[in-house]
Structures are given as structure tokens and as C-alpha cells.
Amino acid sequence: MKIDRIEAFQVQWSPHDKAEQRSAFVRVRTDDGLYGVGEASPMQGGLASLGMIVHNIAPALIGADPMDQAVLQDRLLHRLVKLGPEGALTGALAAIDIALWDLKGKAFGQPVYKLLGGAWRTALPFYASIGGNGAGRSIDEVLGIVEKRLRDKPAAIKIRFDNPRIDLDEGIADHIAKARAVRKMVGDDFPLAFDANNGYSPSGAIRVGRALEELGYWWFEEPVQHYHVKATGEVARKLSITVSAGEQTYTLGGLAELIEAGVRMIQPDIVKMGGITGLQRAAALAQAHGVELVPHQTQPMIGHLASLHVAAAQLHATKPCEWNDPSTRTHVLFDHPPVPVDGLFHVPDRPGLGIDFDAKALAARRVDIGACD
Ligand code: CA
Image (tube, rainbow, N blue to C red):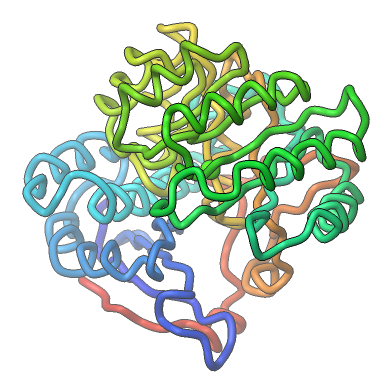
């Protein structure tokens, strides 16, 4: 079996959306008629990753054996490292890796989690990730959204503050007040998390972290700038609440540095670094260090399912899987969209990832970036 065609495309969600608002996908086809689907990081519409796939990655993959996904990824990462090993390149390689795993599952007639060694669980609880709780939203509005998301029966709620990352420590009193109001609404025992989105200085983060400890929050995500690894570790070591980071870390070495600094919960993202192959390696690293792996994942369809397959096969799953703000618009494009039933995502046992594009819906929304064959 050989790879004989790779397509890179965006999907348009409305006729007037901008290129940077679209999702980014790939489809890898083989000479015996199989194909696999993958998703790239959607940052800025995934255009940089899709461009690298068309111009730099796909030409090197035509004719290759799709079963060699790890060798292909590592070879290309090293060959293209000077394009910048973090971000667009790892997102591009992640999309290809996910598609090759989907293909591999279809070739063997097995769901991806079986190829990863089997599932510890196939029904996975999730946490509702709720963004935009900063200055533009009142406390009552935050509570209204939390109340609405509780109807999906999440196992936990995370409130995000989506800071612009420039005005550090702005709005701390407001953030704590919102964290307190949410705690009061859901009661003492409901698991809650707080995502600073890199909005604080180390001392600001410690102030917020102490308040979250008193309020019984489960974890405190990205308290300081992601590139200040030592400072992230310093905050983690000074607080008793679990401090997490890693959604903006693109290499295994980067995750190792976070762990070494003192971070006890890492959150790599399957569409940003390494795909399924990369996330499995991250799981091994976390397990070796006794650190929690709770993947970041905001894409509701292919990325989400790929992440669920890895979570199903993960030995220690200490926190629920992330489910971002739900968007029904993405469901129209796929044949078996993952939706939670009674608070659980069920990992499909169909071959591969267990999801495919609906051909007609895709034809109406597809924006081609290029193909290589
Ligand atoms: Ca986050």
C-alpha cells in the first residue's frame, strides 16, 4: 500500500466567514482506494499548516507506506525543522499523523484505540470548557452560561478568561469574584477548573491561585506566559492547587521542561503536536514522571475523536476530557459526529477514528488549499 494523493482544505462554516475562522483538514489517499482523515490546529484557519502540507510535506509522502506514520513524522520534523519546529509545522505533521492512524485502522478493520493497545474505558466523561469570561461578561452572564452548559451533564466545568496576554494582572478581582460566584452556584463538591490563559504575572497568579485553593478548584491552567517555563513551575511549586500547562508546547522536550520546572499536569494538544503518535509519547512521559496528562482539545470533530481514542487507551485518566463550547454547525459536515450521551462520549468501535465527511456537505463547504499526487 502506498500513499498516492494528499488533499489539504479548509471548511467554510458560513458563506461570509474569513479564512482565519475556518477549520483545517487533510485527507490522505492510498493506491488501493483507502483514505484517512486528519485535522490541523485551527489557529488562523490552519493556513500555515495546510500550506506546509501542500508544498513541503505531501511531496515527500507520495509513494510512502502509510503504516510508517512515526518514521515519516520524525523524518519530516527533522528535515523541515528550520521552518520553525513549534506551531505550524507540528500542526501540519499532527494532521497527517491523525489521517495515517485513521487509515491504519481502516486497513486493519480496527478502531484506533485497539491499535494503541486496547481501551481501559470506552465511555469517557468530559468537562465543559467555557471561554470568554473576562471583562466583556458580567457575573450573571457567566452564571447563565455555566447553567446552560450544565444541562449537557459535564463531569466538571472550566471557566476560561481568554486574556489578550498583554495587560498582565488586569481584572484579578473580577476573575476571583466570578470564580467564587460559580463555586456558589454549583455547590462545594462539583469539580471546577480555572484557565488564566496566560494572563498573570507570577505574583498575580499566586494571588489568584490562593483564592482558587480556598474555593476548592481542581486545577489552575496556564497562570503565566507559556514561554516562562521556570515561572510556571515556580507558581506550581508555591501553590497546592494543581497548576497545568502545555497546550502551547509543541515538542516532547518542551513538555519535559515543564515537568522539570514543577508542573504536575500537562496538556498537549493532539492537533498541535505530534497527532496520535505524539500524544502517546506524551502519555509515556507523563506516566514516567507521575504527572497527569489531560490533553487540551478544542476541535469538536476529528481532533476530538482522535484525542478520545488516545484517552481510551491511557492507563491513568485523572480528569475528564475537554469539550469546548459546543457548536452544532460542525455536526452537519460529518456522518457520525461525536456527541455526549448522558454525560459520556462513547468512543466508536468502527474501523479507524470512526468518523468521516458527508460528501455532499463537504462539497458545499470545502475551500481547497491544494493537493499533491
Ligand atoms: Ca487553556
